[in-house]
Amino acid sequence: MLRLPWLYSRKRLLAAVVIDAGLFSFLYIVAFMFRFRALPGISLPIGTMIAFWLLSSYVVGRYHAAHSVLSAEVIKSFLGTGLVLFLSLGVYLAYFWLTSSVLGVHDSRGFLVPLLILFSFISVISQAVLSQIIRSNIQSLQHWLFLGAPATLGIINAHLAWRRLLVDITLAADVNHVIDGGALAGYNGLLVTDFNSVSTDQQKKLLSLQQIGVPVLSLVGWCEQVLQRFPPELLTDADLLRGEFSFARGTIQKRFKRLGDVIFSCCLLVLTAPILVIAAVLIGLQDGGPVLYSQLRSGLDGRPFRIWKLRTMCVDAERQGAQWVSKRDSRITPVGHLLRLTRLDELPQLWAVLKGEMSLIGPRPERPEFEQVLERQLPHYRLRHVMRPGLSGWAQVNYPYGASLEDAANKLSYDLYYLRNFSFWLDLLILFKTIRLVFTAQGALPISEESVKP
Image (tube, rainbow, N blue to C red; front, side, top):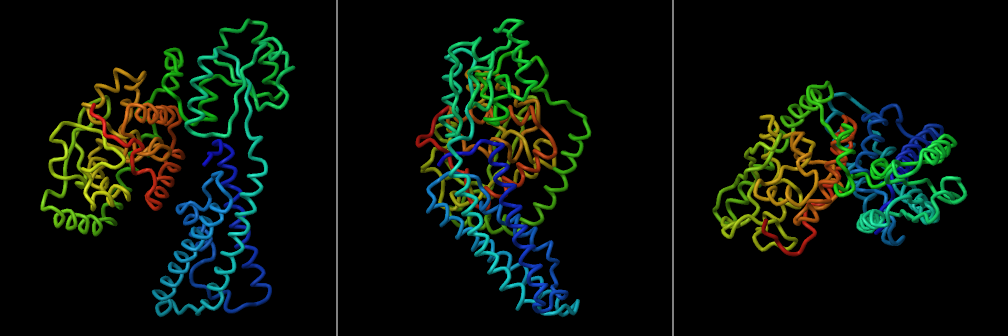
C-alpha cells in the first residue's frame, strides 16, 4: 500500500468530509421538500447526526487516504460504512428511547432510519468515485529536482522507500541550467540541501524563481512538508542553533496543554474505570500474578520517573534482562495481547499525567537502559527530553510499535517534527488519530520479529 504525501492526504480527507456532509444535507432537504414524516419532530438535532457520522467515519478509517487495490478499497469502504451506520442508528435510537417519554418528542424513526440507510449506499459510491479520481491522477503527484550531494539524496530516497511515498526526486546534473529555470518543467519544486554551496549570483536567481512561484525548499523545509518528520542524520548543528527545535516553557499554549491534560485524564479515568476493573480481574484469573507492573522511564530533562501499566507479560518476563518486545513475543499473555492491541494497558499511566510527570501528547518515555544505547548511536536523541513524555504522540500515530534501533531512529524523527511544530491544533490532530488507531487496533504491535537486548 502506497502512502499519499501529507498535504494531498489532507485534501483528500477534506474532500471526503465535504462530500458526505453535502450529501446528507441534500437528502434531508429533498425529504423536507417532499414533506416526509415528522421532520420537525426529530429528537436528535440533524447537525449532531452529521457530526457523529463524520467523526465515526474518520475513527473507523473511511476517510483514510491510501492507494491500494480498488476491490480491497471498496470492500473496506462497505464494511466501514456498515459499522458507521450501525453506530449512528444506535445513537439515534438510544437517544429517542431515553428522551421520548420525558420530552414528548415525535417518533421520527420512520423517516430518519430509511434516510440513513439510503445515505449510506450513496456515500459508499461517492467515496469510491473519489478514490478512483485520486487513482487516475496518483502518478503525477510530486516530482522534485535535487541540488546537493548524491550521498544525501541516497539517505532521502531510503526514507521515501520506507514510507512508500509517491514522491520522485531527480538529481540535477547541471546546477546553472537548473537555476536559470531551464530544467524545472514538470517538477513541483527545487530541493537545495545547502544554500551556502551556491554562489551569491546563483542565490539571487533562486530567490527570483521563488518570487515567481517556484517552491525552493531547504532540506529541513522539505522534510517538514513532505516527510512530516526530520530524520536525525539529515539535521546539522546549524539547524538546531537556529532555535527551531526548542520547546519554550511557560507559554500560554503550554498552560492550556497542562490544563487539558488534567481535565481529559480525570474524565478518561472515570469513563474507563469499569474497563480497568474487568481487565484487572482477567489478569488475576489468568495466572494469579500482580495486575500492575512498573518501570522506570526517562522524563522531562532526562529525569527518571516510574510509570504503571496493566501487566501484559508473564511474571518473570525479564529474568534475562531488559529486552525490546518482538512481533511474536512468547512472553505476552493471551489477555496481555488483547490489552496491547487495544492499548488499554496504557490507561494506568494517566496517573503520571495527573502528577505532571507525563502529558497526554508527547514523545513516548523510554527506559533508561535503552537510552544509554540510543544516545550513543542516534544524533540529537536528547532533544526529545526538552518536553514532557506523552501517553501518545506524533510518532505513535505515524509509526508502529518500535522494537529496534532502526525503529527508535524513525520514531525520533517524528518526535523532532512534533518539537518543531508543537501547537494546540497538532495535539488535537494527534488525539483524533490516536482514537482512530485504538478503535481499529492498529500500530500496537512491533515490526521486528525478534526481541533485542539493549
